[in-house]
Image (cartoon, rainbow, N blue to C red; front, side, top):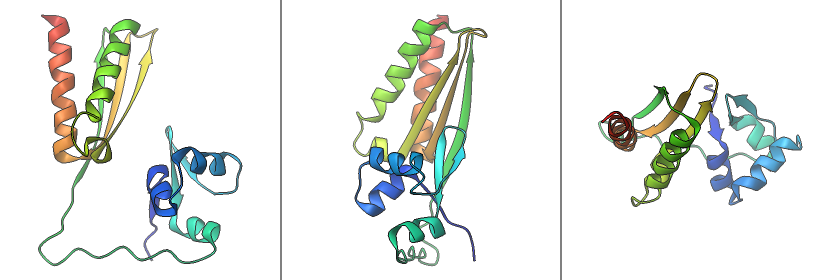
Length: 146
């Protein structure tokens, strides 16, 4: 049997809870989760133990249709100070909520290293939403150079 893992957002949606509540359950040890970088993942088995019952099986995609694709991308921007890193982070994350359904299709996390003047942007999501975020980062980085 394949292991299924859920993000905190997916667990919150499945259980009809707020994301902060799910994170509190994880912090308190009531819901077992594995930390991967800055994100938690919850095994299906652990979620079923937490809820006390089986979760519905995900529907299999129809033959020849229902395909999905996701991208995981790490972008490193060098030579960027804290003010510009904050500006880039704010613009990228605020752009996610400007498009209908945008926030649900892509997740972005950023980390700025002051010592190295480097910003890492982690983008996870569907291909078109990820491409839009990457294009925005490219425009902003090239704008700073010009």
